[in-house]
Amino acid sequence: MPVTGNRAGCLLSRVFELGRGVRPYGQTGFTASPRPRSGHAPPQPNFTTLYRYSETVSDGQNEDMDAAALTRTRQALHGVAELVLAGPQHRLSGTIRLRALPGGFGTVKEPSVRVDEDHLVTADGRRLPLTGVTVRELAAAAGVEAGAPEGLYSDGSGVGLDEPLHVDAEAARVIAKALSDGDEALRTLAPAVVPVLWPEHFDIGITLDEVNYGVSPGDSHLPEPYAYVGPWQPRTGPFWNVSFGAARPLTELTDAAAVHAFFAEAQRQAHPVP
Image (cartoon, rainbow, N blue to C red; front, side, top):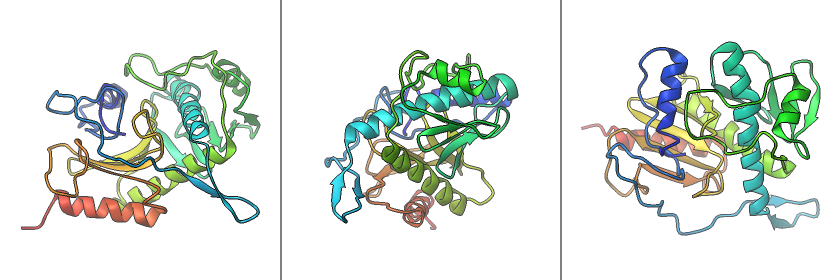
């Protein structure tokens, strides 16, 4: 997602986490209170079409996935990422970084916990359903202390510890594919850089030569997965279609190769050869 009060807040969390100066993750995504480098709120993205995901059902017909289910699932998974994975990991191992994994995402250090579609998988292999429980109940069942990382950022998932979770399995697979495609595309773009799934915005990304590249599973302004590129310094031209840089919904970029092609073109556009 692009920078906002929440994406800009990433900088603070990453500075505190790493204990050394780091470059800001920059302006990416479409968050609720954008704060670009200029200090002025950018206009809304200029997407004019509401894209909808479709799934192929057993009879071969296409059905529109329920947009509400996708949003509800994204919000719940964001809450799990922040409150059940990143928070406990930060308290135990000193990092909030998460990673994309087959079927979802997980921690990079102890405690070893991951999300596989609509289940939480514990270190001992237990599979805990994500639907019908609260964050507090889920964390207790997994043997971790629920709660966000403390003192690192002001924004986050907005999910309460006692709020029941609702995760649709099909929507979870859409989100898992978005994160997986993003991870693969980013590793192809920059093999020496490890993509990070950041819990405050719930997007996976890297920074390369003062340009942020990433994939978001959606947010309050574009409630579906999208790829984004956010140069630290503004670029001009038809490629740059949003105020912070460029973005494309993953309905237009249907696999990792297509996402990588978008990133590679953005890299060329951001750093043209004289």
